Figure 1 (cartoon, rainbow, N blue to C red):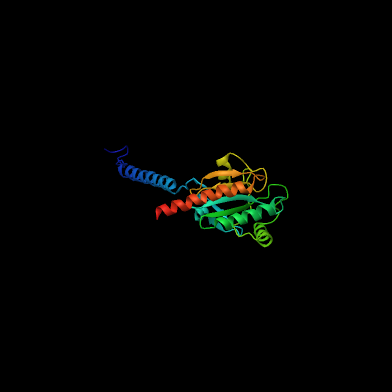
Figure 2: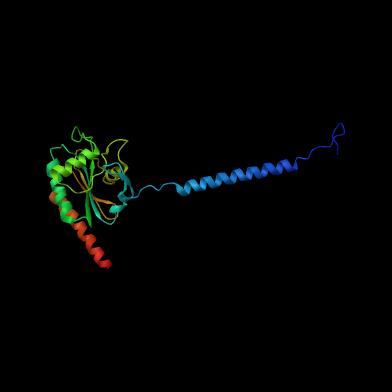
Length: 210
């Protein structure tokens, strides 16, 4: 058939095919992108040891290195009325139970008055030089508000309590779950007994697996 004026009409077949192929490719690429996004989407940490934190020097540290052990996580401060008593008691516990099965993990926090004004390195240096501590220190964090450290927020969410002062203690089992917590004024003897019992369970379990 010819159009008016005697000129033949141009078929739209090839153009439609090209458009169909282009549309199919676009949809395919979009689907692949969505699939890849879902596959690489980071998993929400399920326990304390699933988190990464910063050490006192600002380096990223995976808490996975402590999995399989008991951990006593503490929000510490350098100039609190409880500083000396707690540092000395925590160091004694850290030494007594040994790092093969147990660690005290210290997280400095400056949200309670002027009890922790220094930098992360200042905090670690003072604790080591003045009180002889050897347990790990991490970067200075916030434990309240929207900027709360996620790893520490996991602890407070687990017990539905937010520390009201320095030196709250959270006992974490080998699987990364909080099994007990203590407020500032609660006796260290209670902490020692619970931590020692957890360490005994870890040792007995390991012996049973040999």
